[in-house]
Image 1 (cartoon, rainbow, N blue to C red):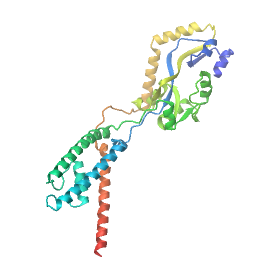
Image 2: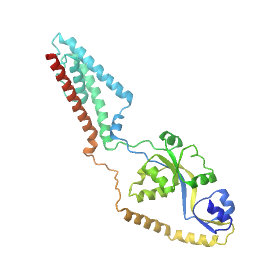
Image 3: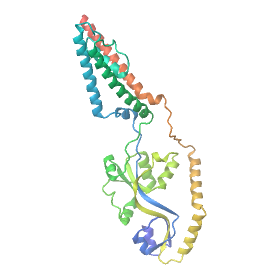
Image 4: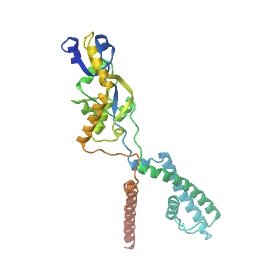
Length: 339
């Protein structure tokens, strides 16, 4: 904005860079043909991959988990009651206490054998219904379980200012933003707490790496920073709102009626038609790649390996610890009763 003031007072002749084509400027200055047409958009943190354990626990809704637990307890009690009724006739005597009934119900749910097959017709009918139920639940669970172990998915994307408020993000700003936003009449970020930075690149890096801020930027600059950081799949760190704040153009402005307008337009058109911009951009990215020295390779295919089974091993370890604690408690009570 200081340069625009100097241009209007004839202290300088030409200004180049990102320029918003708005009525106040178009009324007093001439614009050359643009090198690049760009949009200024809201830059937000990209959604992170969900933790595998969290995704598996949310495989079913909370109400479904509660119903499944209730059914498991109810079936165990019914098995124990039916076994107790049949016990006097000697028809079914394997599930003579409640703990064995729970073990049998859990075994069917996991798809393993029970201690003894039911003999009475009522018990068989009840068991086959429960087996069908467990088969359906197990099929659905296993189908999604393997999928979510390999690719658990991502958090919801930030698409609106309401999403920004819910995420508790601050606005990453630089000194010139306030004057620029006032000039283009952009007031949507005024309600957010601003965190000041010296450079716009610092704002973008804070949003990419720390994920606690959002800012505004052109669309190509964050992509360049991601390329500079050695990130091959920029879609994981570069995310914008769908709508644009304002249309920008890379070009020159000069005082109204200036004699340099035709000369600059000729050079701009020739450079664009000759492919100088594409050549410069290609060389710039190549030099950045050489300076970085390595690029993080990403693939849409994920190899299923032992690391994906870590939640299962943690669950197995938890079961072993729980069994060991239960065994020690039983031994303690047994020793106390013998005294």
